[in-house]
Image 1 (cartoon, one colour):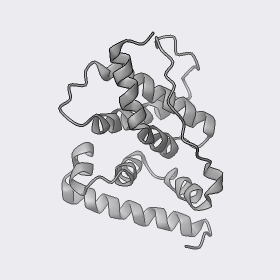
Image 2 (cartoon, one colour):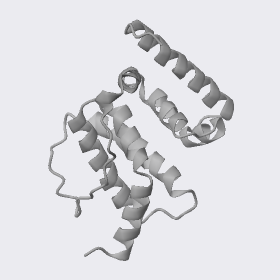
Image 3 (cartoon, rainbow, N blue to C red):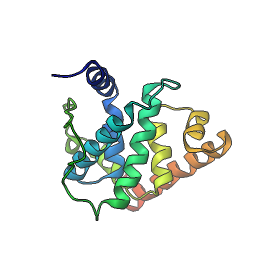
Length: 169
């Protein structure tokens, strides 16, 4: 039986589940790794949910937790075990009816994004979520102008990676 806190948490996470999908797709390349990363992000969201004060939108807070968790997860991935004994719950998020192999362009795009560094991945992630240069900068500790430059350079880098792969636009 779920508590009101768990119910509210799961409703918020399900409203913003696209964040989970995008973060895991940007930071992990195999389906198994993406599923593991989504579960790790959910665990970290749940662990830190009591500290969410509502000073920002839930989605903004969720972005930060997702990106920080993804970066930490990748650093620890080799040392990790598959056992999450410290987690009292196994959260289920409703999955999108989506098969990435159907969309070759998206697959090529995500393949290029895999080659970016952590900051570039975060910039693209926030851009894909429709954030302004100011919001991207605020989330990453950059000035608005620096965020704009970083985003433009990252877009150019993705285009160069895709061109090198032989894909025609």
